[in-house]
Amino acid sequence: MFHILRLLNWILIFMCSVVLLGLTAWRIHYTKTLAMGDILTTRSHFFDPIIAELLATSILGFLFSLWFISAIMARVGRGPLGRYSSELASLFILFVMFLVGAAITTHKWSNLKFCRGSFKVCRMLETIKAFSHILWILSLLGMLYTFLNMRQRRHAVNGPVHGRDTYDNGTYPETRQTRTTTTTTTAYNNPNVTSTSAATTGHTTAAPVTGTTGTTGTTAVA
Image 1: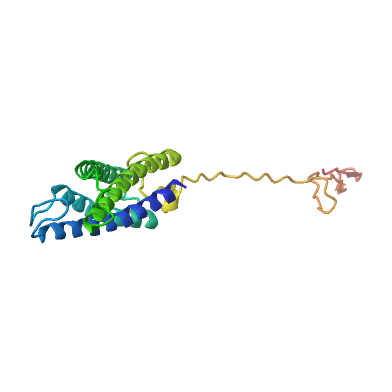
Image 2 (image 1 turned 180 degrees about the vertical axis):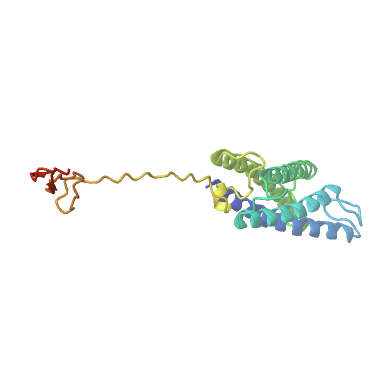
């Protein structure tokens, strides 16, 4: 069950990272080509470092999500990137970087209500803040789902990242074969079986013996 939640969470991270990637790229392009300033600044031809940080983090989120979506669906469980440890490390990196980006952007552009109804730049910054918050929450949920999946399957951090039982990946648990002893019983009193008696019947054979006196005798031969 939890591997399905992990898969759905990575899909959400993928989609939100793509959106945030587009938003931050637009913001950098906008400020780099800005000549006369706007409603929020008087500077021109600049870029915000925190926007660049969110752009880089969005690229990482895009790449990480592509790999782990494929790994969970294809049941990858081997190699350095096929373990829970690699997923937890990736989620922790995303969590920290998105959290830092969300905190700084929220502090820097804390009040955009006065301009977001009339100026596109304000609406874009509000959307960037929203998606940066969504992504650190998704990263935190991803770590939680991974730990729950490990507990459910009783896996260690070096367990297979696909999150199923081991035999689902082609490795089956030990099978023990039990030797069955069959005892054959002979029915001695079966009327259909002809028994041969082992008793030997004695008989007497009479042989004539001629004696010196002419008297005929018999000798018993057993």
